[in-house]
Image (cartoon, rainbow, N blue to C red):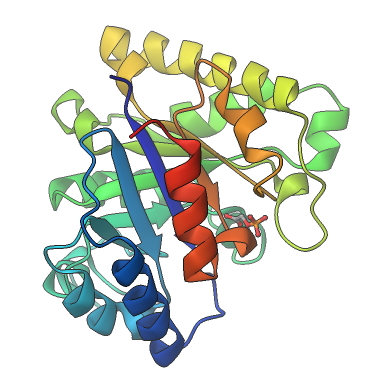
Length: 255
Ligand code: PGA
């Protein structure tokens, strides 16, 4: 059976208390849930991680962080290391979200160091890639995606590939002012990314989960999942309510 991933990034919205309520409600709904083919995850804010880690222990939901530094430790005030995250029960880290790239200036070279650090610590890196509207209009989306993948995954060890997840999130489709992407457009970008990953890693590149995100909602989600190379969904606003998260997760994927 094919494997899928589904999860949400809570950005800078939910407090520790909000996250606690979200998780308790979600776990209540997920009682008895088990799936070998669907990986669920949530990515709360840093201050909520400890509480989230405690609540999610032994649950079917993985805990992710929204960023991480590449060094094990050092003079990097305001940053967080892999070891600090692991201590809180974090097993996944989102790297290169468009807001990190475009508001905070993270480069592909920075992300490459972070990806390698995550894998060294056995944390699943969720690498986010995506083109801007200008890049789409200029017809260079696939070139841009190839560059982000090749630079971000430079010297990525083959033995760590089972940890890697990738999310394609067109910058123009994300957030309140985002325009949902047509499903056939997404299918083509995912095919191009798959071709690039196969070029980089051979047949093992074919097994790396490729998630789609950006204004995903209950009505457009099924369309995205019909594409052969869309292996899951990475959802913001539409999954910030625990019941909506549960409904999306359990209605869209074959369990
Ligand atoms: P959105 O967010 O679903 O609210 O567009 C997606 C994201 O930024 O990951």
